[in-house]
Figure 1 (cartoon, helix red, strand yellow):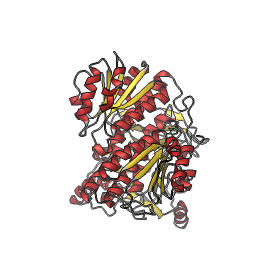
Figure 2 (cartoon, rainbow, N blue to C red):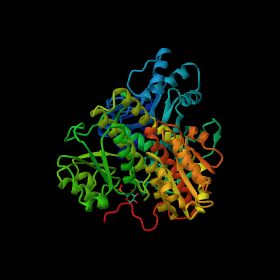
Figure 3 (cartoon, helix red, strand yellow):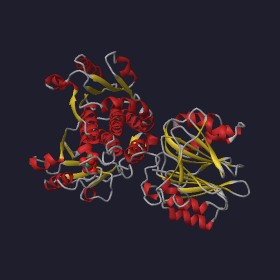
Figure 4 (cartoon, protein in one colour):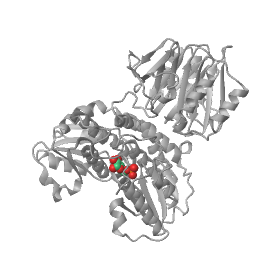
Amino acid sequence: MCGIVGIVGTGPVANRLHDALQRLEYRGYDSAGVATLEPDGTLVRRRAEGKLANLSARLEKDPLAGAIGIGHTRWATHGAPTEANAHPHMSASVAVVHNGIIENFAALRDELAATGYPARTETDTEIVTLSVTRELDRGATPGQAVAKVLPQLKGAFALAFLFRGFDDLLIAARQGSPLAIGHGRGEMFIGSDAFALAPFTAKITYLEEGDRAEIHRDGMTIFDVNGKPVDREQHLSAASALMVDKGNHRHFMSMEIDQQPEAVSHTLAHYLDMANNKVDLREQLPFDLAGPDRLTITACGTAFYAGLVAKYWFERYARLPVDVDVASEFRYREPPLEKGGVSLVISQSGETADTLAALRYARAAGQHVMAMVNVAESTIARESDVIFPTLCGPEIGVASTKAFTSQLAALGALVVAFGRARGHIKPRAEAKMVAALTGLPGALSEALKADGHIEAVARVLSRAGDVLYIGRGTAFPLALEGALKLKELSYIHAEAYPAGELKHGPIALIDEGMPVVVVATTDELMEKTISNMHEVAARGAKIILITDRQGAALAGNDVAEIIVVPRVDPFVAPIVNAVAVQLLAYHTAVHMGTDVDQPRNLAKSVTVE
Ligand code: G6P
C-alpha cells in the first residue's frame, strides 16, 4: 500500500518526512520521494527507486530547505516502479502524492491531452496533477482547484497537495483510503495512519469519506463531500505504543471492514498490470498453468469459503475442475491425489494447524503446493512451493474480513491467469475481468456507505434466535460466510443453504417472523433466488435482501429490508456482497454487546487441531 505523509512545519521538513515514511515501510513500497516548497518559492522534489536509503542518500547530496512538504512511498499500480513514476508528481504550480487507484484515469488522460495538458508518465497520479494544474491556470485558488477536480475522479484513493506560492497550506482528500491529520504545536501533519505521525504528535483527526482538508500551521478546515465545513473529532492515538492502532474505530473489526478498499487495491496491485488490463503473475511456477487437469483447495473457516467461491470461478471461467474441502476433513480422509498435481491452501495467518497438515499431505503425495497467505513469514508460506500473497496488512479482529476480500481478489486474478493459459479466457474477456477487479476498491467504498442503514437493519437480527441465509451460485458461499460471521460474533444460531435446496428440508424451519437473509445480486440466477425468497416470505419469514438496484426493483412488497450494494460485474459480486454480510454481523454483535474483536471461545490463529 502506498504511504502518504505531509508536514506544515517551522523548520526544514525533508528529513522528518523521510522519518515518517520509514514508519510506513511496513506497508510495502518500491520507490519513494518528497517535495518541499523552497524558500525561493519553487516546488522541488527528490525521488528514488527502491529503498528509502536511496532517497536518504539523494537528500544528503542535495538537501531541501523548505518548511512545508509532502512525501510518499509508492507501491506500483499503474506504471513500473521507476524514479520517473515515483511520487510526488509535480507541475510548476502543484505537487501531488496519492494512494489508491483512479479508475477513470485513461479517459481523463485523453481529455487532458486534448486541452494541452499531455501526460508524461504511465501513472494515474499524474492525471490529478495535470487536472489541478489546469484549474490553477484557469485562475482557481488551490482550494477551488482541488474541489473542482475531486468529483471527476473515480475509485478509492487518498491525496495530498502542496502548492507554489502557498507556504502555509497543504490540502488532503480522502475517498476510500484512510488519511490521518496530526495536530502539533504550531505545526500540522498528514499521514496514511497515526503510526506514521507517532513521533510528531498523538493528537489525530481522521478524515471521513469524501472529506477534503485545508491544513495550515495553526489548524485546519475540513469540508465534507458537499463542500460544507464540518468538525471531525480529535482523539489521542495509542499508535506510538502499539504499531496497530484502532484509529477512530470502536473495534479492530470495523476498522478492518473499512480498510477493504485499500487492502483489495494493494493486493490487486500485486497481481494486475492495470495499465494494460491484464493479469501479470510475478510468481515463478514450477508447472505450466495450462497443465493441471484439477486443482485441490483446502482451508479452514472464512478462508475455506474463499476457496468455495474460487471453485465456482475456476470451473466456470477457467474450465478447471476444483475439489475444495475443509482442511480438518481433508487431512484424514485419505483422498487420492495425483502425483505432479496441484494443491492450493488458503490461510490468513499461515499457521492454521489443519491447513498446514493438509499442505503436508499434498506435498507427501508429490503435489505442487501453492499457498495463499497474508503473513509472508508464516510456516505455511515457508513450506510451500509458491506463495500467492494477500497484502491487506495485519488483521487483528478474530473474525476475518479484509483477509477474505483480499483472498477473493487474488483468487480472481489467479482464475484469469489459469483461464488465459488454458485458452478459455481470451484477451477481450481478460480485459473485462481485470476491469471488474480494478473497479473493486471503488465499489467497496460505495458498499461501505450502507453502514448506517445496515446498523438499523441489524436491530432485527439482534432480537432473533435463529437466522437463515440463502443464495445461489457464488452468493451461496457468501451466505455461508454471512451465517458464520453472525454466529461467531453475536452467538445467534445461523445456517446457510443454497436457495434451491430450501424445499428439501430447511423450509420446514420457517415460521412467523424468522429472519432470512437473501444474497441475490444481478446475475443469471438472481430471478431464481428471488422466487425462493418469495416462497419463504409467503411462510412468514422476515426477509432481509442484499442486492443491487436491479434486484431491489424486482423485490416486491414482501421484503422487510433491502440492503443495496453497488451493481458490479457478477464475477466480482461476492467481494462486494462480503461487505454487507460483514457489516450486518458486526452491527448485530454491537447491538447485543458481545466482544466483537475477541468472541468467546475463538482464536485468531488456530495452531492446534
Ligand atoms: C480461525 C479464525 C477465522 C479464520 C480461520 C482460518 O477460526 O477465527 O477467522 O477464518 O481461523 O484461519 P486462517 O489464518 O488459516 O485463514
